[in-house]
Length: 194
Image 1 (cartoon, helix red, strand yellow):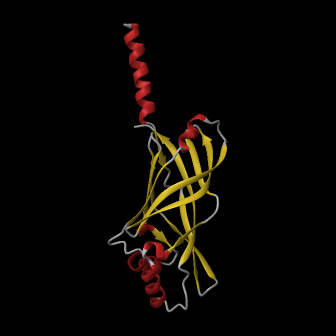
Image 2 (cartoon, rainbow, N blue to C red):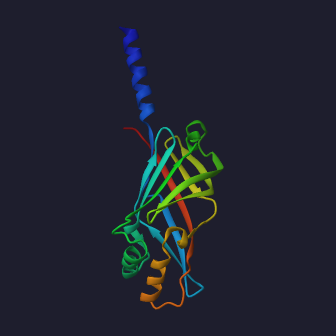
Image 3 (cartoon, rainbow, N blue to C red):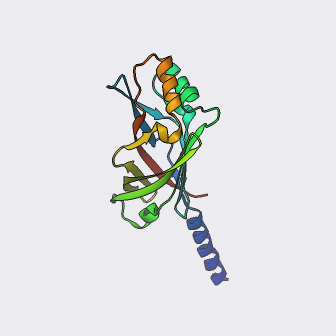
């Protein structure tokens, strides 16, 4: 009987570990970019809704709700949604990757590691591979962060967004809007048990 109870307890522990996931903390995570208009006027924008996580095999999936764009000007938010991102057809940008970032499970708290990562960005119906360097920080046994080490440059031409930029430029009567933007992020993951 004792052997059965021990086996049952070990099985429960194994199942709990197998189901452990790293869930994206939507309140602490941020994805932002800088737009430049009139050649030199820079403004920072961000997305308010990010969801996703990392499964036990290291598969990363993050969704960026493009309708959650925040530029601090409501009419500009609406124009970017409808004219640039065309959210009626492409409401979400998807970031996916297979990563070995789960090494954090076996490292001490406060460990900071610089890593080269590759991920796929599906934006406006187009999928592109991106490589960048990130800083992974293990905050505690149940939390770690991933910071972009330097900005990632996203070119509108790569995602068929140039026409949308032209529309924004025309409606706002601007002489120019930059067609490439630097993107930065901080992703905070918390361990979750199902």
